[in-house]
Length: 126
Image 1: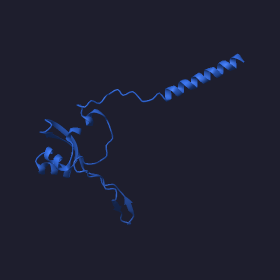
Image 2 (image 1 turned 135 degrees about the vertical axis):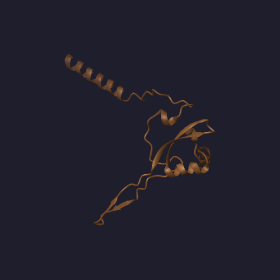
Image 3 (image 1 turned 90 degrees about the vertical axis):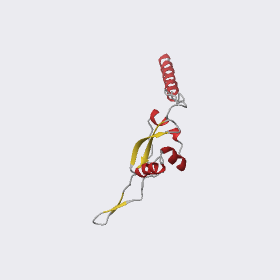
């Protein structure tokens, strides 16, 4: 009987310990985000393939028509380029993922500050 009772006590303790370890709460956050730190380089996060300035996104309605007229779905992705621009307002370089049309738009407006103001983009996030 003593052996049975100790075994039950041990199993109960093991279950409580594993449950406490599993449901410990929120994970530890090693790198705290400060307000002066740029968010795009500080953490690795998956982002959608969307132009930061124009908001151009992939065309998922496209089809390929073969010789036998079989129609297959395909995705036409945006031609995204990582480009650094110098922002006069911020006094530093800003790294953006722009489509090639977005790069031409920045050139047309004479700088990234004017283009961001036109399209309502907050450059402090980049």
